[in-house]
View 1 (cartoon, rainbow, N blue to C red):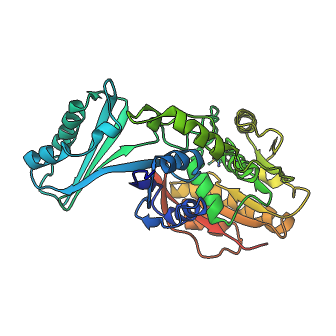
View 2 (tube, rainbow, N blue to C red):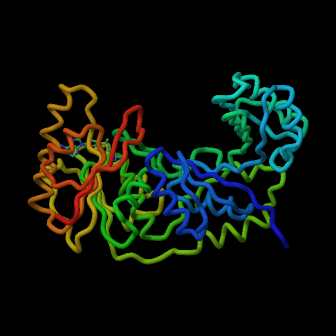
View 3 (spheres, protein in one colour):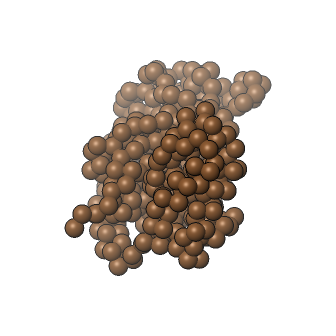
Length: 370
Ligand SMILES: C[S@@+](CC[C@H](N)C(=O)[O-])C[C@H]1O[C@@H](n2cnc3c(N)ncnc32)[C@H](O)[C@@H]1O
């Protein structure tokens, strides 16, 4: 039977697209392409489901419902009536709409969103503050209508209740691990682990655990969704790659609260046997037993110059510990200011691209084997 195919878009923070592309292709979607802020490819409903269950680096997965040229609100309204909104919206669906207008005759995004909600209403949708999200994007008078198939952003794996420090999102952590060449077959250590995001993501990759195994998705609310077809596909996706790993995934932090949060988050994710967290200042850190692997860390950032002068001492201590005790390990460091990375005294390769993070711009610095 010929399954309908859709244009799909997995989003990620700008700068991280190459690694999301690599991940999408590794799942067999070999014709995927990089675009600004994400990756596009074509797929069926089964691909939509698998993408949500399996992609570690995607912030969300959108499905394109229609695309057309339009230059007036009356024309937009007419063309929206042709978009197959009934695939996702049915009686009682609660729906919200977001619109953006760029370089287009229709410049009022509120009016465009309102037309989209009206079209959704015609197939039974009820406008609400929360619910299925439709996106309308107007760019150079070309209108694209998409639906969010994920619901809660995909970094919400369903395990992190305790937050310490300023955590990186799981999706970003996954892409940064990939950018550091991590593929699940070496130990990983984060000596300023906060709530343990890098460590638990790395352990999940090694154990072959699907990131979406414990949560639900917006597509489960779609009008055309059939649980009986989804269920075996979900089972197969989740069972696919569970494997034993003899590796250890370690985190430490000087804050007792961070260590506790990391342990509890790892336990909820079923990773207690793979992960260990300890309370140490970075200066007290020792090299873990076993083979060399990857140290990945985002130390505190400083936005003000005065803070950065103080932080430079911490970065310098981190660099000294790496050089003196971590021969053979590679280091990945995420930070907001080049002077902080340089204060480590480590021999960096060229830094990665700038990317947005918590209202700041950060980038990844990497060493080869020390
Ligand atoms: C930005 S947070 C790390 C967030 C973490 N990557 C996550 O995703 O949850 C920085 C962490 O460094 C820790 N830290 C700061 N100074 C430290 C030191 N001297 N030794 C060890 N940890 C330190 C803080 O307690 C904080 O948890």
